Length: 509
Image (cartoon, rainbow, N blue to C red; front, top):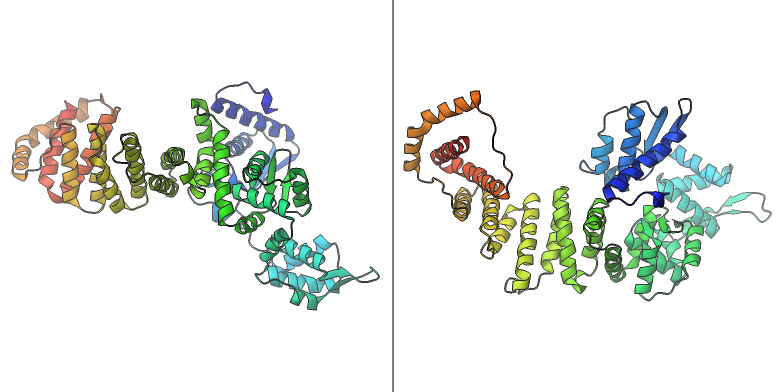
């Protein structure tokens, strides 16, 4: 019923939908009956889904939901300390228990086989031993191997159809050249060309795929596929689920196998095609830009663009990657910011510096790449990038900002002389001065230390804050000043003290 929501800004509409969904969940619970919510694949949860979980949990803590048990499943190897599931759900206060699920034990594996076959006999026991030996308790592979045994006659009914037979000789000779994991690839390879093409294309897009996107990619590659027939076949072979609008892989191992079979050329074409399709879904209005960012669509677009053929439309590609890189820095995804900015930088033409139309873009991308390298612990590379763009910037405030970054990078590398030189250059761009003469600094300290201490004492007793750092100029200046002062403290401490007195006194007045 989302179509009935009033057309408002994306944030308001999203909040309204979240609260409506929580209200609906609340209706299923009562004071007497327990409500159990099972949430799978939390590692792929979008921000809106996490908001629903938080809201339900908050209502439960207030006693508005009766008896509630929430079971959340996620892959621990895909959820690090900075993952939204960790910061928004797992670190939340409240009664909770963590259960680490590993492979099934041999006894559990045998029970699963017995339940799947609905049989108990000596022949089933022999099959159980072989199944556990090959799968080591992985439930997905257990199911795959049972299907393999049934389809190849390894486990079959006798001629009278009264008993089951496990053919151990046939099991030993069966082709498993690449291990149990190859069973999925073998099943995909047996599909007809049209159906296999659909699966391979979908695997490039993601685990849950829009059918409209798949149709676009197939037509873009001039592949004619009867969509419904192929989807039905894939569903019957237990490779996907599908609804009116989406296709979902039954397991990530299925998608991984299909992705590997796609080949590099097909993968690059589909990544590029899907990036184009994503971009077409939204116009660049301000509200849609917010929606794109809020829904992580910008990052998805940049990911596929980076792995596709961005050189086909370098101008558009650089614009998207620049936006995504900046946003990645804001949400602390430093490695992604580095990847996006590196790709954008590689797409710049060799004569970008000499071109008035490209110079500003060159500066923006290069600065972003420098920022990303700093945050990925590569200050040496950042220094080279910042130095390379400094002479091409016209705005003095922007030049000062680059000098502040150079000052900080050199300070990190213990290059105090270079750090001070960058700081002095930045101060000149702001028409401000800094004391670097130790003789002059001694005189200033001796002459001002007592009245300075007195003014500090008066301010502590009677003063109040009347100034805050608001303008960009102030932000740049104080960032530069702090880094410069630290460099001076390590090389010329008297100069640092002199500057500290002078600028602090100026602020207090």
